[in-house]
Image 1 (spheres, rainbow, N blue to C red):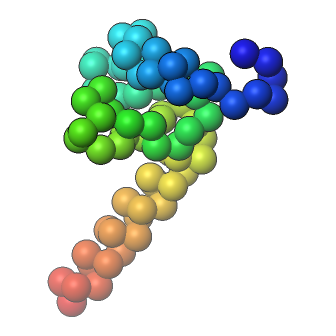
Image 2: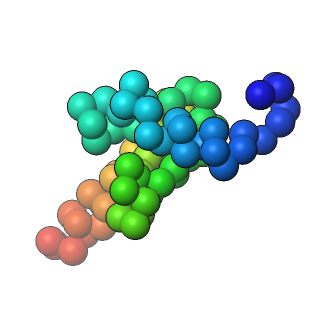
Length: 76
C-alpha cells in the first residue's frame, strides 16, 4: 500500500482478523489502520475503538467525562 492510498476492503478485513491487532482478544490496536471505529471481530456486533488512533482515544475520554458530569448533575 502506498502512503496516500486508501487500503482495500480486503486489507481492512485482514487487519481485523489478525490476532496481533487485538489486545487480550477484545481491544483493537492497529497503528496502520487510520479508522477511529473499525468493526468488531464479529462484524454483526457493531464497531469498536482503535486504541492506536489518538483521535478515537481522545473522543472516548471526552465522552466518558461528559457522561460523568451529566451523572453528577442528575444526582443533585
